[in-house]
Amino acid sequence: MKLLKTIFFFILTTIIIYNMTQASDLGIKKKILKNGLEILVIENRSVPLITVEICVKNGAFTEPPEYSGLSHLYEHMFFKANEKIPNQEAFLERARELGMVWNGTTGNERVNYFFTCPKINLKEALEFMRDATLYPLFDQAELERERPVVIGEYDRNESQPPYYLFVEFGKKMWGDYYNRKNALGERSTILAATQEQMKIIQKKYYVPNNSSLLIAGDVDANEVFKLAETMFGKWERSDDPFIKNPLITFKPLSNPEALIVQKQFPVPIVLVGWHGPDTKRDLMGTYAADVFSYILKQKTSPFQKNLVESGLMLGVNVGYQTEQNVGPIMISFQTMPEKLKDAVKALSNEIEKFDSPDYYTDEQLETAKNTLAVDEIYSRESTSNWVHTVSYWWAVAGLDYYADYINNLKKITRKDINDYIHRYIKGKNYVVGALVSEETVKSLDLKEADLLLGSSQLEKQENR
Image 1 (cartoon, helix red, strand yellow):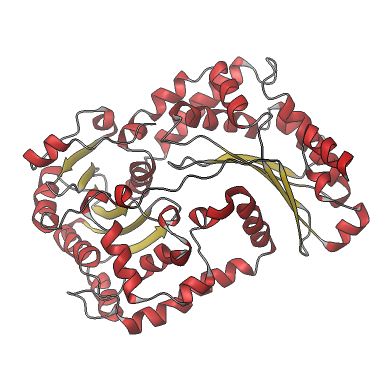
Image 2 (tube, rainbow, N blue to C red; image 1 turned 135 degrees about the horizontal axis):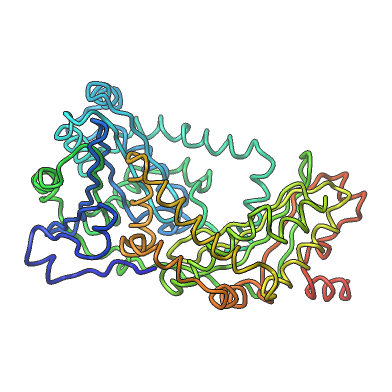
């Protein structure tokens, strides 16, 4: 994956820039304003609807502890008063007038906001997005009303026992910088959030050269470019926020770590995680991670047959999250309490075989690559949803990465997968955590060492 490089000469000398890379093959037309704002247009005239989206490189990865969760709170404040809309009630009324369906999301490395409405309201929708983006008021009364709404999301998560496993697991995985992978944030910082903090987030990250504006649906790209330039061209450019506020460096895991979270839950849940590749340092590793994860998830794989069909596990999943600052590799499974220790040992045995020549066939490898490519193509069927995918990849990897995704998937070889396994998984430090009931801990005499994989398990047991 390749992060889009800033092409300073073109930014400074021309108003309209069309992307001449493979992005055009996706049907995406691009323009960069003088202030650095990237305009991405997807034309699809099959339905008379449009989606307008603003995407910002913001989220948990930008948050020091005192801001943990405030990118998410900012997302909620986006749909409130601004210089043109006096309050949330007026905001909602205007959205109804324009026939809008709207929402926003906050992740580790992206925040996005989007409206879908009839195409006849294109100009009004762009104005609406501009006013919310450039001119928020962060009204104190609205801020105080919104904090409990965000805390409500926090409370709903806390009501689920697996949440406590995810939190403790995350703290082991990311150490002192756990908050940089925790988009939900911390209750205390959300409750203490101020108008000034909202303004600081806006000044740092809500700048045109850290944002993209995406318009998808029944539109003409040339018309959109003209409207966008008129409405967003005066948005003032800032210094690169990631030069002034560089990303933190996660410390590598120094040892295998295990933890047990005791909560009443029907069956044990186990998580195993490694620090994986990312789009800043290992592009090919990210493609290999996707392909290998897909192979392991298939019911025909030895991984599934040996762990699930054998009856040891109720289900097992393998995942990798592509991010620009250390993507996590995760294996999760559920099992019956009495089979927990055996399931851990069986998983350890499977990991040892990951790089064996016969662990998967050449046919399974090709099927994984082809199916991932087909799934990606099918995901573009709904333009109003596809635009969110485009904005995600723009934020975490760059549009070139996304445009080349299918081609690079097809290049992955068995050697690439083995390189990925050896660099990130096999013999590497990891975190393993289990959510189990107090009764299960007692009945199995369960210790943290019982969760460790392979040789690290033996070493810990010898030291007990």
